Image (spheres, rainbow, N blue to C red):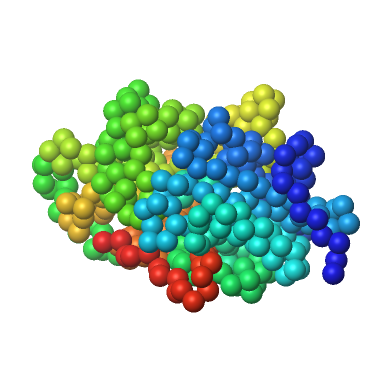
Length: 391
C-alpha cells in the first residue's frame, strides 16, 4: 500500500498545507476561484465561529511520501444533532487526489472521530456553520462558484459514492439574465393582487436603520425557516451581527422586505457576487488587499452578478402572492435604466423546496449548477431518509 500519513491540523505547517492543497489540485481549472484564507480559517476559529459554543471541529491533512494529497474536516453541532432522528455530524472542506484509498482514509478518520462522540451518521460535504456557505458537492455546472460556495473536481462524486455516501438532497443554483424576457405572466398577476391590497407593503432595506431590519429578518427567518429540522433559529444578537457584517456590501436595490399591517412577513435578500472581486485577491485579505477589494467593488464596480441568498415567507402568508410582489419590486429596479447587474443567480434552492423552485422557474430562471448533500449512515442497514418537503 502507498505510504499514506494523516495528520491533525495543529501548527503553522499543517494549516498552510490545508489551505494550499487546492492550489495544486485546481491549477488547470480556470473556473475555480481561490477562497479567502481568512474565510476558511474563521470556520475553525472558536473566537469567530459561534458554533463552537455547542460544538467542536477538527481537520486533517493526508500526506503521501510527505506531500499533501488530501484534506478533510469533521464537526458536530450538538444543538442540531440532538434534534434529528439520528445524531448526525458533518464532514467538509474535502479535497483529494483521484485515489479512492486516499479518500477512504479521510472518510474513515472522520467517521471514527464522529462515532467516538456519539454520532450515528455524517453529512457531507457541508460546513461547520450556516447553510449559505461551503455546502454540497458540485456535480453539474462547471462555472465560476459564487462567494463561499464550493467548486469541485468531477471525480469527487465517485470518491463519495464509492465510499457509501447516499444522496440526502440536491441543491440547485438557478440563473437568468436581468431582462424582462421569459417571465411567467402569473408573477405579474399575483404581484398586482398583493399590491392592490393596502395592508401589504414592500420596501428595500435602509443602511440607516439596520437594527430594525435585522430584527425583521430574524422574525421572518425564524418563522419561515427555523421550524425545519437542521435549521437553527437565530437570536437577536446574531441577526444584528449578520447585518453589521454585511453592511459594506449591502446594496439597497438588492434587499426587499414585505410587511402586512406593519408586521414583517417576507424577504428577498440578494448581494453582489463577491467572487467577481475575490478572483483578483488570490486568497489574501490583509490591509492592502482590503483596499484593493473596496476599489474593485466600489470604484471599478466589477460585480455585475447579483446572488439571491435567501427567500422566505412566513407560513401564514404563503401562497398569497407575496413572493411575486417581492420579485416585482426587484424587477421595477432591475429593468430601469442604469441598473448595474446583468445576471441573477438564485443560490441554494433545495429539491425539498418545490415552492421556491416554482418561483425560480416562473421568473424564467434555469438550473445552472447542482450540488449534492450526501449522508452516510454508520449502520449500513439503515436507509437515508430525505428531509421533508418545505410547504
